Image (cartoon, rainbow, N blue to C red; front, side, top):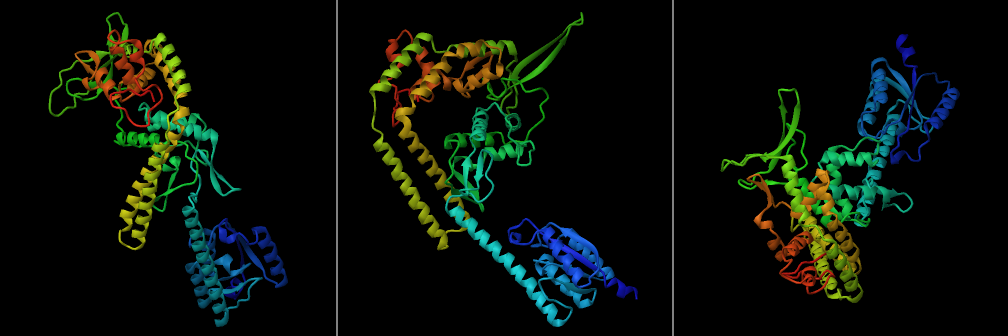
Length: 535
């Protein structure tokens, strides 16, 4: 008698998920309304209502599993709106059929589908479950096909990264102006070499950039942002690099510099014994070539006074020689480094003359860049042909998938660099003056930076001017022989090197020939050996 009473117990089960396959399905409230009305009409007594908001594509629904376990233990019945509410996968569907076979599940009722516990009823129910699974599988395949088509069109088929927005109207990805400027600034700051990933994370947090859930961006996420090719117009999908139609927000050159910095700093972090000092990572030992580090020392006098000092010294990590260089007080090092920076400062009369000549050159010169642009176009066309041949080779199974992806990535990177160079050349005629005038202002401000107490700003300045050529030896800071003004000036490596070279020529040449190369100010379309470009 007890088993008969238990078998009259009906579980009302309603389900709705946010997945695509449930788009046209009745809401939970609508299902409950119809099921309750059906129960009244059929004199069905509902003992429990179960509402679940989860997809049935895969097994693992907690409320459904709990209901099935209770039916398997005590017996029972199910009332649902449609078979696809109970199962869209073969495991859950098979479990329901098995419980009907064993009699644990006495019956299933649907307002939209006929089913009783007979061979024909179970056959029809199995067909309905199979149809639900086929619908999900087909929908999944159609969705994947649609995503692949978007990729072929150059549209990233997923959530846009930080700095971009998914435009629901045009189904494209567009630049989010405010955040894109912050992301670009993060790249620029990181490539200067004075920021860690933790500093990038702090910078993004202070600028109001968080994850989609509002959480702080971690160091790992910051590293992902700095290595994401999406920001230069490419994107990764399915383990492969693709060309995107979205607007890049940083240059390929800046992205490559960020990758190089990530590689250099890819060593595991070690907890420092002292707080990081401003000039660490800037200077090398003149004797053994190892980096210069800093340490704090405390001096306690008999009268109770306590003095804190910072000393810079060689790390003495060389395995081939014993370094005998001595340490140097922070104040002395600062004084010597400031002196080196001041020697590169642009005098006021030089700045005025450079600005006057640049304006004159800007008005009078208009060199043709057509040939150079055409050359870049031809190279891009050659790469496009190589990409097409590469794809044909992959489709014909001449090359394997790994080689195909590797070669495609290299060709797309080369193509992106050429496109960027071509765009840069097209704008060179009109875009060189403003950066040059900004550089004049920066060069004039070196005296102020050198005299200021902001040591970190001084480090950034010194790094940009001297690069990795600063040495400390015999308690003296100097520029390495490979980075002396004459060698830099002859190679034309940087605009700062040219300025340093110009200072060495004072008194031996007229000012006009010191300040301006023979070809003028406007950046050349090809490199000029023995000349210093201000580009």
